[in-house]
Length: 181
Image (cartoon, helix red, strand yellow):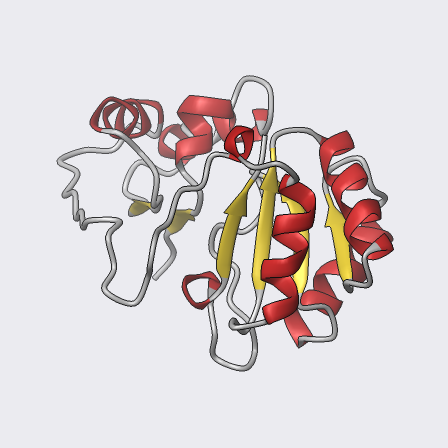
């Protein structure tokens, strides 16, 4: 049986116009194949975005399965970097403790990824910046190093990471997500 499965379906609504414009064209599949089953997957859609996904994909009688983002194996701690004397040094100290299998440091902008990566490497940490401004071969190499465990920490824009599973059985849920602005 054939089916259309859309991962990161929130991109249809939230970023489709600027980030992944091809997602906006997926609703045409219903016109071409009226009986085609369609499944849309996302971990981040609000109720409004969910409704827009079903509308844009022309889904009929959709069934929605939801769950809380709160997982018992995750610990959340918020530290406002504006309250720290040296946010990068504090982050480096934390990373050097290494009490995690892998980590992602999220930045809003590509330049922030590059800048933070250079600073942390200068402090002796093996990290890599990852963002859309890199060529495909470089991104693939960096992601391969991170996925295999050769690089423990990746510094990425917020578009990275959804649905990435590592071959050793860990997923992003066992990685430490860090956010920086």
